[in-house]
Length: 446
Image 1: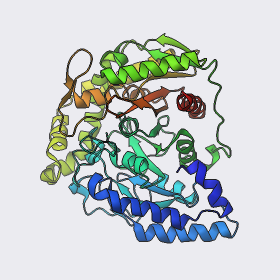
Image 2 (image 1 turned 135 degrees about the vertical axis):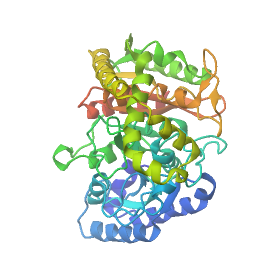
Image 3 (image 1 turned 90 degrees about the vertical axis):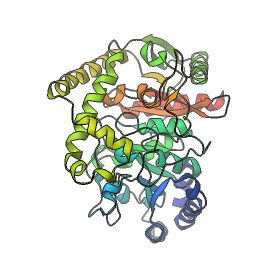
């Protein structure tokens, strides 16, 4: 069930929000003990809000396509009166006194909040294994990671535990779990969606955005997350695939792929060509330096935010995240400043790569969902660390600030999802969504 499909039925009174919410809560009750997607479930609050939504809609006060829709929040995002744990025992007693800005906007749109989803502790990881509330499991194969850090959010969408959800993305944390779980994840351009009231990892790189069952649902949520004056009343129409100009950033971003991921992405690109898209190669000259630039920024920012609690509550962190934060203390100021300059270089190079194009196209994730506990994965050129591989294809657009979206494009021979990533021009997220709608429709027809 998608938001785009059910919203008109809610508006006509053919479907009730209370029933939708009950169904999502039933899914949580049935599946959460196994998958651990939710840290906190707000069942009573959600059902009360759903009944209010039904009353408002019946009285002719329909607010739009999120009115009465069950939505979850990554547990970095404040929901007034509910704990914001950030997936850490460091914050096990922290209750939000007010909504985050994004929560307020979704509440004003009529969304019904069913709970707070699990994540890699403080968003500082890619697998949702290191959480103070237990690891999360991939719904396609529970022996594997759902990706991260927004792993619980992706599970919630993939299993119908909620119809919409809010994630965050610092190095790929919306797009990575979207790809790993076979759903859609939209990282808007940097600063488009307010991060006020969201626990930060790196204020230089953090983005807030939706995960969804389809591109249309991602747009509905994204549009509601914007300031009122920036919203558009009608969803964008799909672009024409014939003549759509797509650039493939050859080299670094394709050099270290899992064989199955490479096969599926190459087949998708060939399908898009045959359907009329114009697919050309482009370059991002300093792509190989992105990991170093990213690392110095995220470590420096994280060290500053966690300085006090790392001293006062060191044992409340999970071991891997604590080690990462202790390493972060040793980032030199000169390295941080160099990284800021490198970030500007990458942004300029992505702008250049996009010249004359509608979007860049590349894998969302270099590997399929890794087995839980795996330290390395085999890829072209030999085994590499899981964390490095999972960030490899998504990092560029956190550094550059360009909008990017992941959508499913097929599966491995073992049935694991593969994600295709599109990245668009700054300030043109609507145009990126139009391109993604066209690609999504073409893939579905293949």
